[in-house]
Image 1 (cartoon, rainbow, N blue to C red):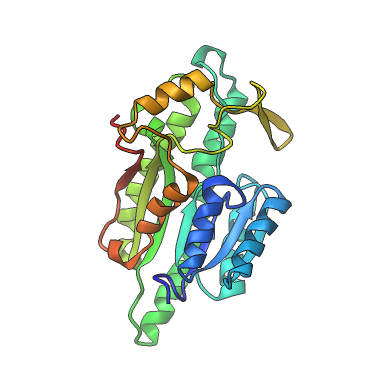
Image 2 (tube, rainbow, N blue to C red):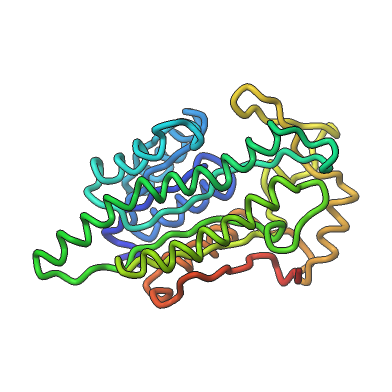
Length: 276
């Protein structure tokens, strides 16, 4: 028996890194999980990993920034598993530059994936959640506590040089979270943010050849952190190291458990003791 038995979760960016570990953790605790990834391979692999451990999962492939994605994503949860209890807005990437060199394309792309996409998903989820609440009340049943966890970053709380777009988007996530916590309290939905510090992912790990990039919608985006800078960053963390994707997923899971049912509108910092 898991803490999340009978729950239905949707997780964006769940084919790789932190998102994959979030999906696996929620599934291990009993939730049926709708897995999203930009690419079919990682999404299918995550679904197979969940099903191979006895869980239930379906993939929804595509960019969270696409028109109509939000409705398709939410619809998969309701149609495949009959409900929607947990929403984790995790998908994203970074596209860094100092402000005088940052293009409108860079700014718009990062705001779209980190802020506009979660907004659209939450907007699409409202009718489904409202109907589920209405149905429960009409049948004389108690309304379960549902969960929204929006993923942010310490960059959104304290800023970070070279990341005006990312920091602005993640700061916006805080405002979105606090607003939805007030709007959705009447549905018995808690809405919280988990802000990550340095976590070991393909976006932060030092590239083996000194240069690395990922493909996002046909764009080649450079990722990875210089080894010397990475070491300096780790020295600034009281625990002395970067976090693992599994540890990051644990922080998200905490906000999905029944023990957090009276916590809403908050930002939990998962950064190894790093102080902004």
